[in-house]
Image (tube, rainbow, N blue to C red; front, top):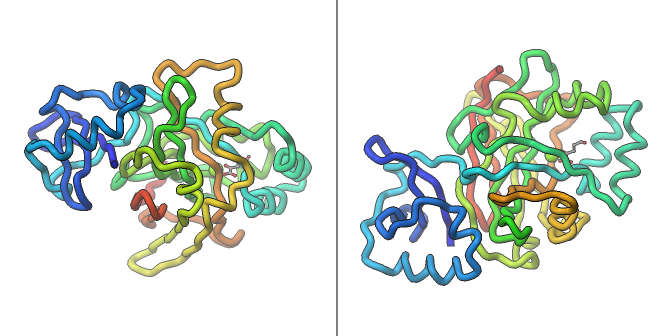
Length: 285
Ligand code: DO4
Ligand code: MG
């Protein structure tokens, strides 16, 4: 089942449940106006399956604007969870190479705060590249959707936009390299209920278009993530509370070559098979 947030020219933010690839039902029709309640309930899947079979009015997906699939959750991210990411970071920075090398093998993962829900960019809206950076890349990542008890209740697609020159200059600049206007996109919806073993069969694909030419494409498999999902979730929730749940990006395994930087008006397309597509144009911020 796929759960989304949407609006139309006439309807304010609503929660929708996709019934197929091109239509959804508006859950406001049955009094559901928040995703949080569904994500907290243990029988969310059966409730939604039941509701999508009811004779609720359907809306064409093409007639709605999808909103970020987060309400009040903090968005966090894991780093250096793929061998490819460790190599890229070590290459970009002599200064920080040992830190990346060590964290890949350490028991404790790298976890960092990424975004407030209200700052997340949905599919179709622009992600940002910093005007003071000269090496900007998207990071296509599987994102875990966790409820307030730390249970993985679904998945979405994340783009952990990053300024690699700023990050490479000094590890202490990581928050500036990773957290700025338009640096976090999530969407298009939440895929509920897949077991980790199923999600590990999914592929993550990145395509970057520049004036209708593909200037980069690459692919990895979710199964290349070194750490188990529940291990990442357990560390995130250690000595921490998330009353509204959290979203945790699981790291990138697709890295464009070091000669590549994003430019304004590029379009970043991320596919996670099993979820869908997250597409965002790029703007300078
Ligand atoms: O410390 C650098 C960030 C790593 C990251 O975002 C990733 O591996 O995806
Ligand atoms: Mg990342």
